[in-house]
Image (tube, rainbow, N blue to C red; front, side):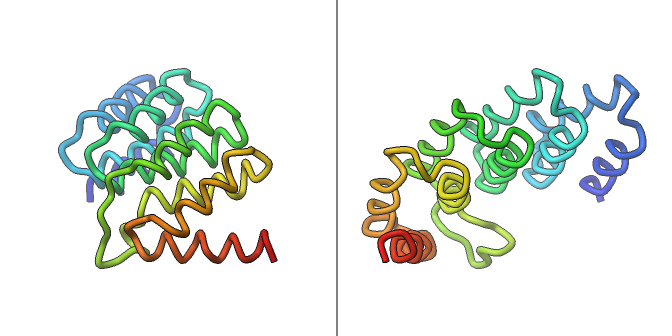
Length: 159
C-alpha cells in the first residue's frame, strides 16, 4: 500500500518541494525494502536532474542491506543515467562482489549480480574488463542463473 502511495505522490505532486524531500527520506531510511525500492524508482523517474538523486542511487546500489533495493538502484542508474562511464565501476563491483545469495523467485527478487552483468553487457560491451568478467561469472558465480546468463552471452560473443 505504501509503495502505491509513493508512486501516486511522485506522479501527482512532482512540483511540491516536500515530495522530493519525502522520497529522499523513504529511499534511504524506510525500514521496508519495498518502500525504499519504490522511492528509488520514483526519485529517479521524477527527479533525475536533482544531484542528490544520483548520489542516493549510487549509495543504495552499493550500501543498502537488501538485494531488492540494490537491484532497484542499479536498474534506475542504468535507465536514467545511461552509458555514464563513471557508473561502470559500480556495476562491475556489484557483478563481482554483491552478497546476494539467491531467491526462491528470481523474477520477483532478482540477483543484483545478474542485473549488473546484464547492464555491463548492454551498455559497456567494448570495455576491456567486460569479457574477462563474463568468463569469470560463467565459471565461478555461486548463483546458477548468473552462471547460465554469462555462459549464454559468452556463446553469443565467441561463437
